[in-house]
Length: 318
Image (cartoon, rainbow, N blue to C red; front, side):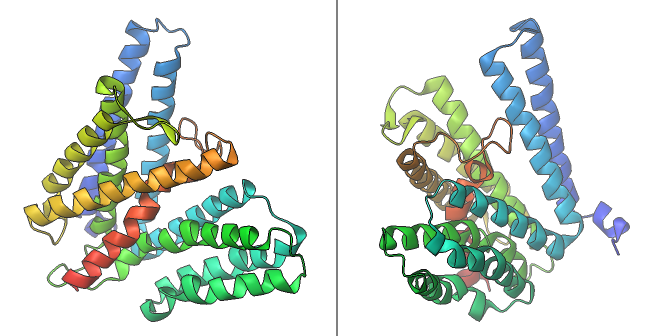
């Protein structure tokens, strides 16, 4: 049963309300821009901005609803996100009949078991379930089909999809299982810190790139990423992380250092995912989130930042 009184006085609610206030300001600015610049008519840039803000309302709302149910709600939410992300990844991957058994095991056994193990806090097994046991089992299942056409390429695609969409992303809800000295039951704030900083870095890189971007960083992978966007975005997101240090068990300097590392990992993760999209000849992973593409387009930076963030905290703060 939800304890509304304790939730009302919690820091988590205050963070959620601040996020809603920021989005309210953003929505108001977008309305003014549409009225003053677009004169109510279709405008590519403003329409894209409005779509992105609306998508953020949905995402903040879903995360807020999950936080209401605390540990269980967060685990269920990220299990669903993993399922949708893996579906997007496999949809863009060429598979054959010989992969069906491996795919069924990935979706309906490996994924739910991974999050169940996090729910029961069995770190020793969930940390190796996919990179050890699933990685051995999936090629065996594919081999039993006796389909050798592009076997190594097919096996790598299924394993890589499971690694990114399930294993890496599962480190986000796993943060609630950490027992941190003198931090009590505030672990949801670790997730809030991770998401605000990494997603904030993405937004700030986009804004700095649009305002000041002149030098392309990796035109073959992403024609919109610039050195100006990268430097401005990561530095501002690092400052944002430092400003949020009271939400965490870190000191101000530690919060800034960790924010810098996860922002950098998020950026590099975005580059890797862009390389995969270019290889597949698509711009977005999907169209589920208006203004953001697919689920993987929104979480590509999180999947690379979350494991590093989790293990840094687990090694030094537990």
